Length: 234
Image 1 (tube, rainbow, N blue to C red):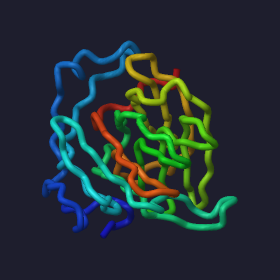
Image 2 (cartoon, rainbow, N blue to C red; image 1 turned 135 degrees about the vertical axis):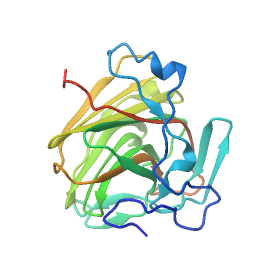
Image 3 (spheres, rainbow, N blue to C red; image 1 turned 30 degrees about the horizontal axis):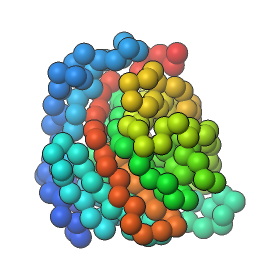
Image 4 (tube, rainbow, N blue to C red; image 1 turned 60 degrees about the horizontal axis):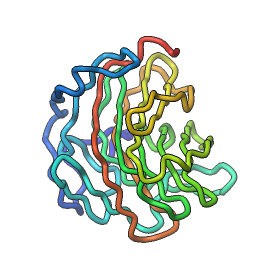
């Protein structure tokens, strides 16, 4: 089980994906060492086996360097606002994140049913978390974030041109804020959200997906990486 939202050494049972016993050791690849056009510090790729599931998915398997995750029907992450319910069963594969620090997740946005979603989660506990990524809403792919500090909010912007392409989501935590950015393929990152988040609270972060309205969602995750927080907002 989770202790204050931070994963234990081993993942929950119920999915055949091996986990390591300790905090994963990142590896820096040649591509990461080159950095990106923003000039940010290089990131270190984490192994898929280095995280623990908050809620095990229907299936998870490694295919080459990728991770394929099948979401359970009805899985979701939300607290109270507007809809009046609490769901805390999204499939998030998390590992401790340094403070300050940043996490990036890349995935294929190859899904199209209402509320299909995937991206990254940054979580302190069941009442304090952030999810960011791409989600289908009202027939179109949207990029956005949900910030939960007791109650959830939601912000999105349509990106129909991102459908079927590789999307990278980045969350950078420093002080009392998390800055969320996203991009498609090798285009520049765009700012998605600057959100409040409690300073000094231990968190875990990593990829997530869920399928609130249907069975059969399969998400291909391409990369999970961590590194230093952004040096500046702009």
